[in-house]
Image (tube, rainbow, N blue to C red; front, side, top):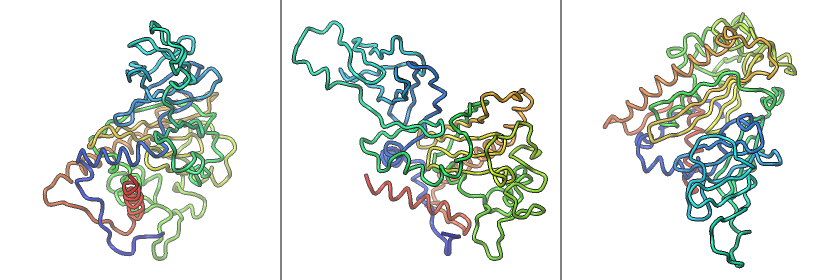
Length: 377
């Protein structure tokens, strides 16, 4: 699909702040789709664990004794107590022990012991393993799906978007810098903002210097009359403008180039891969940037932004890292401000819905996708 051929209405404004609608979306999207919840490097050693929250659901991520990453509902099979109260740590002897009645489980989920209980040879120990959560890893990113049977395998969900970054050694990269942003806006507003560049000339002047096409309020694949996906002074060689090589304030690369990319990928400066609606990953010649989206309420969203580099990179000086992250951080901060303005504005009694302009076709796709998900619950 190219540009929208006619004006299209947005989602109803109430969908961005009503609690009932937020709960519907948790059940239709966040508890059913594949959701990125972290990096495999967060669980370096067998027995390591982290607890992540999705809506009202608490999930244990752990690396078991066989070095496999697994996910479990943070709930004891006895009477439903939370198993892990702390956000991260190490399971002693690979045992998950309930803090209430001391039932213990292996990191592979099996019930091992029920201390202090009266003996009963008919007690169904084999049937009381931890509640499993579907879990998979791609490129070092951990994904979970809380539904019993996901609509797609993780591979099918990742699809062609994952192929866009196939030459970046994602699984071998490590987080060199991580920053968290708390936004006072609905998660959909942030995803919509990410999906269009209509706002770029006014909101991101620094980015538009590095990416001249963004100054025209379009992405480089827009279907405009007489449009050529090229950049002034650098026709046909990539996405960043003349004199720029990557997403930094001056467009310069200070970190070593990531080996294994094609000549076009080095010249391009930026490749996006989007995984609706919890993650997008951006490949640059010298680093990778990922943004995780986590809804925390009807009108609040948490963003976790990671900058990834090869583990043995010798140029990770504080000065070089600051140079690498400065533009990406600024873009997120700028986006956060306008998303919060958007959130406040839609509370107007007279604004029941908005309208999309032609180059906001990705928003139309997103709205269609969300309506389909909501219709299935």
